[in-house]
Image (spheres, rainbow, N blue to C red):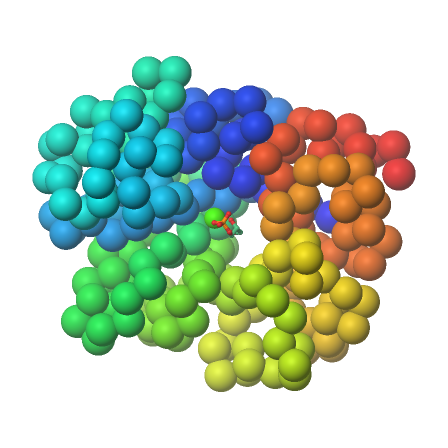
Amino acid sequence: MEIFAHRGASAAFPENTLLAFEQAILQGADGIELDVQYHHSGEFIILHDSYLDVTTNGRGAYDELPLSELMQLDAGRQQKIPTLTQALALIKGRCPVNIELKDPHSEPRRLASITGLLRQTLEQAVAGQRFSWADFIVSSFNHHLLPAVLRQCPRVKTAALIASCPLTYGEFTQALEVQQLNVAIDCLNPALVQDAHSRGLLLGVYTVDRLQDIRRCYSLGVDVIFSNAPDKSRDYLKKL
Ligand code: G3P
Ligand code: CA
């Protein structure tokens, strides 16, 4: 079972910052999960919430500020909000990256902007920063984005995110052509794991930090957990 650092090593360091990503690698995470939002300037920024006051000293919705002002904000411990380009330049292919696209909008023009920018950003990372296409998993709760991502970036893996267990389990994933299903720990059950595996899907579970949850994921055959504390989760896993 692989351990991906959820928003970096976010239990001990400010989430979704370069510091949290570097520490995740030092903690031995198998991969890093980060949250990506499309900014109207045509840049991806790494931020979980639409409103700045949740994790920074800014106020209002992130898309109301120019990029130059966003870049000045304090995201904790003197960290700045990183762009996706900056994060990939830091990670430099040292581990896989689960890029969660947060954008809830699905207007065709916006989809095209997002997937086009993603392709350009990942192409640059593959060309200059020691990444291979197989290092990228692109996930989203916005399932409209996933086939569009595959059309632009056919060599990445895609993952559908869900926060509740669908009546027909993983049936909906067929239309999305995803390789992975990432589910909330609250909707984890043996039938869902079995269904996912019978469809050839990897199963990821978020957010998993507690020993009893790690034990449950491991015993059910979960493939990936997303943990805020990859170091502690690794210790728990070793003791099982
Ligand atoms: O990608 C898994 C998980 O991060 C999805 O939920 O709200 O933590 O982004 P959230
Ligand atoms: Ca996330």
